[in-house]
Length: 562
Image 1 (spheres, rainbow, N blue to C red):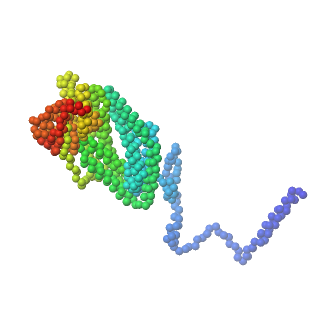
Image 2 (cartoon, rainbow, N blue to C red):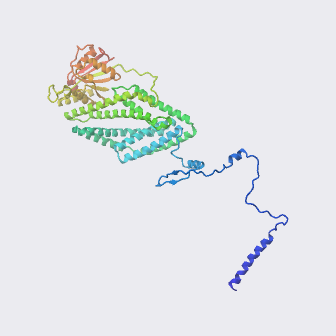
Image 3 (spheres, helix red, strand yellow):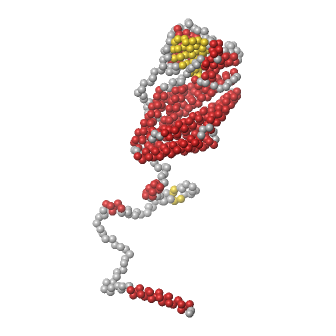
């Protein structure tokens, strides 16, 4: 059988099937012929649409705008491409999926706290990694600022949700900051001393001391378990973020704003109390203002958009903080100069010259700061207090010390009387006298010295023995030609709150001062040898009889106690 004959049965069966289907289909009636179905469907007019139909009905299509499309530049491409702007619904969908960081800031107070915590945590991690790689002066400074910022926001969070873990993390940050403070001071001192090395090459020994101090502080900083502390602080950070988000979901923004305002008021009131106690001659009071101002400044910087602060207010805060920081840096360097391991007489005279230059800078900066104190009111609110300022203590203790053995008058190397310095024997004896004073437990808050070199060197020897180099100050009223009345007037005007004062000066002024305070006249002058010391107990300081002589010791008696 051929191939053609084998295919015919299949074709016949298919044709038969088609014929059967046609036969089964009903034929159209001849009376009512079928109408052809039109492609367009005519709508039947209905009644006026309801409100629901109005809302759901699509808007009429508008004609295509003839305005040209805007050219939008895409990042990462070198040419301009045409991008069709997103529809409003598409914008909402994209906004839900990927929230933009450039969205307008919300007025919810907790949003700013959460964003500040997140930002300052990232700064802390970045600065810590840089410090662990290289402990340069810049990295140390940046890490201290990041630690202070993070501690400030932790303190603010504790007012919303008190948590022991957050408090422990804040205590760890404070320990880290204190460990880095001495290292940062060493860096600042070295920078300032490099400016004096060209003029005073003999100060290279002091510069080497600062290098040793830097290495010691760096070793102490590296002993801190930075990685372990970081893990704990990170746990506290995550815990704080969860609790803040939970509080944000359950509480209103007004309650959070009230807590923030109350926190800033507490910080500002603390600063105001410190400002009321600022004394021009007591630089420790300025340092207390600086410590109280730091958390307030960081909090205002964190919440600037929420509080509506202007950039001018933050610049004022930065200026005030910078002036107080300069005073602190100068005081630290002056303290280390006084307490340095100077061995030669020539090195001591160089230290005195540098110290006097630094004191002039510190005095000028302190005067500018005192004039700028009213500007604190422009940062947050006026400084107003209902509490009366505590009256200064009337009782005082005065220690009167005459300078040690100095170069005799008429020495050609010292044409001016104010330039005469202590001799090698005088320095040695004064060290033993200072040791005897320390064994007698003589205590004082400030050392006031004559600006003459021999008196200032005597004050340096005593301050070095007692390790209070920051308390030395020069007073023009203690010059030998000044009357005792001027000394009393200076103590009343500038040093009234200070209870224990050591006066280092010259004869015959010191014996006349002792006689005036104990007897009311200058006729009963005691014998005060070079290196001699006496103690006066003052009930109420005034010009005239107001004190009693407790004891008077000769230099030999003091050296025997050493």
